[in-house]
Every structure is written in structure tokens, then in C-alpha cells.
Length: 244
Image 1 (cartoon, rainbow, N blue to C red):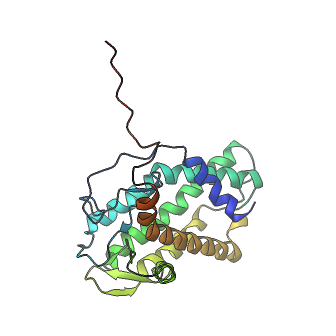
Image 2: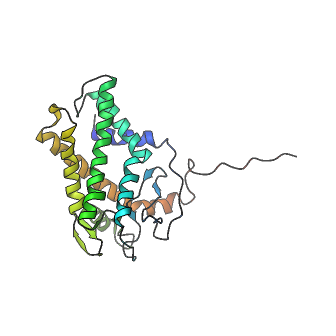
Image 3: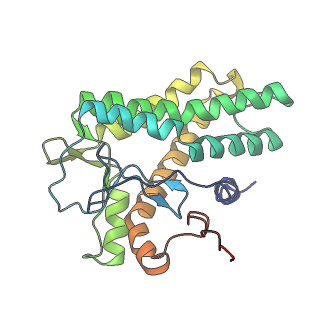
């Protein structure tokens, strides 16, 4: 199955699920916990995005970084996407090679949840606190041209904002991804603990990271242009008409 199908399948499935309720947010799109509770297309979690990088946004506290990790790891969209990804992997007996049957699917599901949870744990919480780095994505915004914004989005894989506000190498994000992938050797079967498998997962994680940054960069523009009045699956029901 193509990589596009593996990404588009979970997205199409979870599109049918209603997102969590909106919360009060600041003009910069952040809640009182320092996170963005808007959802891309009304469904995909967007906790990491700070809409205006030029604004004086206070850094996340250590407690908020741990809250970020917990919210991402237990978000219904991410868990549902992991469940469907495990199903696609089961259908083709792909990595991790647990075999076939219900027990094998349970192991694949556990591995899929473990994969993104371990990367979130290292990148968003442990290393972000250790290196005093902000794990959020700070948008460049529409003041720049399209190509420059795409390049900026991809570059944020390697560049992070320190809690002090200065830019530096994204040690928490990059090392967190590597440690999370390495941790999978604790629960992957021996047939899937090869260097080629780890390298392929690294490429998939980097690709997903870049796509996520680009989506976070341009989503507010698309929302303003095409979804200014919200989404059909997020609108409150119409009040009943009372007949006399």
C-alpha cells in the first residue's frame, strides 16, 4: 500500500469523528495552558501552534510541557489514527511483523500508540524541560511569501525557540524523535529491529513532522478563507421550532 494511502486512510476515517469542544483562547490562539485548542478541519489536534511568532508569547512552564505531552498522547484523533494504521499494517503484514490474527492486531495497536507516545514523551516533555526549549510551532504568518513560509515550516524541524526566546538547534525535537524510535526496540519483534526499519521510520517521522508544520503554518489562512463560519459537524444543533 502506498504511503499516501496509509496517511489518507486514517485521516478520512477520523474526519467522521467529532472533535472536542472549543475553549476560550487568546488573540494569539492560545488557551490558559499555553496551547492551541483549535482543530485543523475541525478534527485534527493543533495544540502546538502559536499563530503569531512576533507576539510576546510567554514560554511554556515545565508543567505545561507535561500537559502538552499528555494532551497529544491521549487525543482521540491520534488514538483513532493509530488504530486504523495498525489495521492497515495488519492487512499487509507490515512492520512491526507480529503476524496475523486478533492478538497480533492488539500488539500492532499497542506498538502504534507506543510509537507516538514515546516520541511525545521525550520531545515535548523530558528533553524540552532538560534543554529549556519550547516544543510549540511558531508560525511565520502571511507577512511572508508562500515559498518562504514553506521553507520556514520545514526548517523548524532543526530550529527551536529556547524558553529565553532565542533560536537554537532543536535538540529536544530531533533527539526526542530518535530516542522514541530507538525505544521501539523494547517492544518490536526481532524481525523489525533492523537498521533499515529504524531508518525508514526516521524518514516517515521526518516527513510527517514537515507536513504537520506546513499544515499548522497555513491552516489559519485556509480557515479564514473557506471556513470562516465553522464546520457542519461542529455547529450546534438548531433550536426546535415551537408550534402554537
